[in-house]
Image (tube, rainbow, N blue to C red; front, side, top):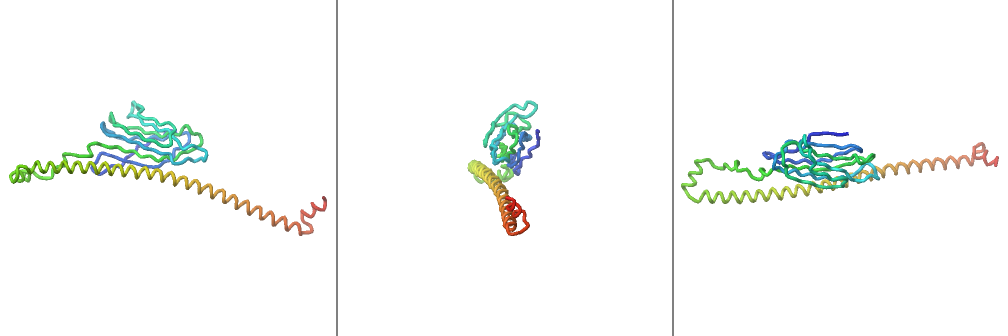
Length: 239
């Protein structure tokens, strides 16, 4: 079964870059596909994924991931076959909606829990010269009248600010990526703990039931031994 969903990535205020992370279940024998809509040439698409758990204890935590160019061509750009985790990034060479698929058709009984993160980065978000209108034309004229070097000094400071902001953006992006990867690892641990707790509860209830059954059987057997007309007395008398 093919599930096609439109992936609405989270927009940053005043920015063209987008980001989305989520955890989903891909059923056995099926693949779930998403479209990263409205990609532009020059933007960078990044996909990272990790299979955190499977519904069957004997199942493998792997899945096949595909990335395709916009329709109608749907040219294959990436395919990670039966992997536990992986990542891919590339610069868009054409405009359109890029397709990302998580394929679990290789498994006939095991559903997979997949955590993934998708980033769309636009180089224009680093710096936009149109937003540098800090002063009106009259203010610029007054500054130049006071000092001919004012503009050059101001431009130098702007360059420093641009460099600092760019470095901050890169570092924040790295920290955010690290947090998301830790979140994926934590999700895997949470699913593992939940699976262990389910198995523990099941076997605990089974053992309690067997203990109660054995206790009731023992009490019944002992009582039958001391009754004159009990079934046990009849059997022992005949033998």
